[in-house]
Structure formats: C-alpha cells, structure tokens
Length: 113
Length: 115
Image (cartoon, rainbow over all chains, first blue to last red; front, side):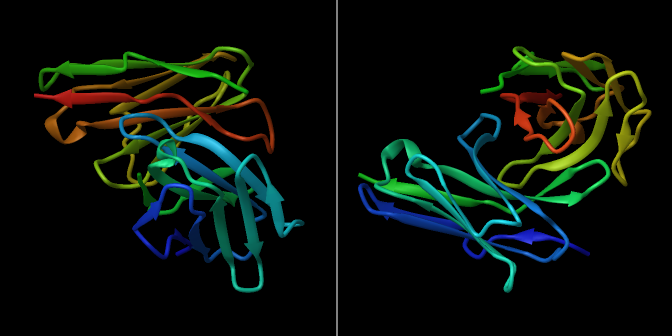
C-alpha cells in the first residue's frame, strides 16, 4: 500500500547548526505535503506546507524541498535552537475526496546545547 | 493562525465506563474535523473523518460503535469511547480545517488511561 516514511528515526544537531530531515513518499499522485512538529505530550503543530506545483518553499528559518522525480521531501531548519527539539512528521494528502493525511513515522530531532 | 482546543487534556477511567472528548475550533468554523490516535513513540493514525451535520467516516479497523463521533456544529466535535478497556489507553488528537483543501490544525491532545 501507499506509505509515507522517514529515512532516519533520530537526529542530533549542535545548537546553531542547520538540520535536514528527510521523508520519502510512495504515492506519486499526492499533491500536497505538510511538515508538523510535535513536542512531548502535545498535538502536532503546523510548520510549513508545499503543493506539488512547487519544488521549494521557505518560511521563517525553515525550508521545505520537494523532489517529485524521486518522491522525496525534506525539511531544513536553519540556525537550530533548543526549542526545535521535537519529533517532526511529514504528512501526505493521500485521499483527494476526503483529503485525509497520511503521516510518516516521525524523526526525533535533538538539539545539543 | 487557527486554534483548536480539546477537553479534557487528561482522563483516567475505570474499565467498562465511557469517556467523552471534546474538540473545538476556537477562532474559525470547521467544516471537517478528524480524530487520530497515537500510541507511545508511534505516528498518528487516523480514526475517522467528521463532517458537520453528517455521519462520520471511519477508517478500516476502527469500530464505529465503540468510538462514537458527533459533529453537531461547525466548532465542536466529540469522540466518545464507549465501554473503554485498557487497550484503548492512548493519546487522542483531533484536527480541524476550514474547508476543502485547507490545512489541518491540531488540538493539544487528550491522554486517556483506562484502568
């Protein structure tokens, strides 16, 4: 079946460095992707999204890159801060009628002070 | 932004009892709300999709008679876990969106512990 997965379950980055979190998706028909941040005991927080007609989108300290050729999504966080420590999920729009989201397995990002 | 709240944030109940969880969109009207379940160190799993004024659509493997969903208004959806058992202990999270092709915004989650 279709799935959204992440390459790395954990990632540790020195404070101030940049981090890159990767995600592979398998449904080539998906046209909308979102990155969420989830801190311990809390609900997911929207970070940034991108539609398939774009290959790059930037926000505040974050950039999402979409490579439709290899079905790969990445989240870049610049100048990481301790507050960036969390689990990051990519999500894929997998059902165009109901627009359900399929979540990846998540990557735990730890910022080392 | 869009704010979604959940109540209660944490609940402990005895096996066999029912628990109701509320999900509210505070600053927007949500035509669709979603209910997810998340077990420790796992990803979010969609349980059901709820459209205001109509019956919820449940994902495969989710018992609709056990997890009752009501979406009576554009700002409120409720999930009732009926005859809860210890295996129902989990983190339940709702999300809401304004309309078609809009972003989903998530609530803070409700941690359910069934003893």
